[in-house]
Amino acid sequence: MKMSLERFPRSILEKMLDICWCQWSALGIYTNIAPEMKWAIDPEALICATMFYGRYDPRLFDEVLDWISVNEKILNFNRLKKTADAFGPKYKACLGASLEYVAADKKSPRFLSTVDRWKESRLVEEEYLFLSWGSDTGYDVKDTAPTFGAWGFLRNEPNLRGLSGKPDMRNSANLFLRLRKLFGVTSRASILGYLLLKGDGNSMRISKAVNVNQRNVYHILNEMTEGEFLLQWSGGRESVFSIDREPWLEFFDIDKGLRFIRWADVFSTFQFLLEDWAENGKAYSTAYLAASRIRDNSSKLLKGLDMDGVGYRIPDLSRYRGESYFHAFAEHIQAYLDRIVS
Image (cartoon, rainbow, N blue to C red):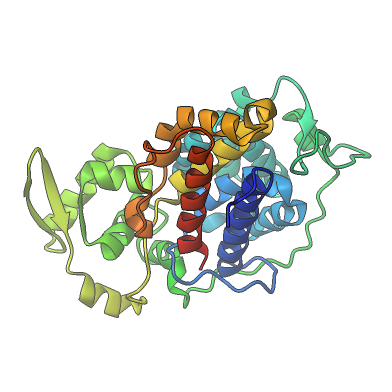
């Protein structure tokens, strides 16, 4: 059955919110939603993603503020700053407002130094923080929370319930956080987590996958090789590093079916599509126009999806003409998302 033009963007938003809820459930927010178990969670990418998707689900947004206030010590703020680049200036402002709000009672230098980096991203024109898809107006605001108002976002004062727990370290999906308990909140934990799930990679590939500076990645890989933890060989212009996954996975008691996906790329790619759809309604008013708009953006849209991690490759759509391009694109995007959600 063909996906309708009106239903397509809403279906993406709903599935991305489902993904966010499942991952946050695994990380310990207060919910009865089944936790993520088959994909390794990237906590910094998930926080950045919630600054966009959570605007369409106020309860999720505030549960995440509550979680950050409880679990800030396990977050990598340097990595959070780098990951936020993929989501754009508006969501740096949203992050800045959120972290400044949470930091109000903590006076934590880890929060405040990060917040200072994003002050230049404050919105020039005010807008509602919480939105309803397809509506030009946001949620009713009686008294704007001062912290969020200072960053340009209109919302009522958050009501943090203090019910968030800590991540379930028995859940393999929390591999990256568990490694931080062993190696500290460092790049080393991210790099080892990638190698445990993917087996090998060069410094450039690993750097892009885990959002860590390539020079730092290469230095750590060399150190781990010198310590006889990794093997190294020449792979063209780049050295390739590999790890014997089996004993490590057994040592950490990690589900061998756990999979890696570049969550920052996936979250930000669908954010780009949904934002463009919301901001350029006329360009998506018919299937023919939507096809033209999506075709123009296809390079950015398809390049950002981690095909290797999902195990589904969207076929060449160039043979489709007119509005049939939209229907083919929608069909394969749905199939891609079904691989992630199922």
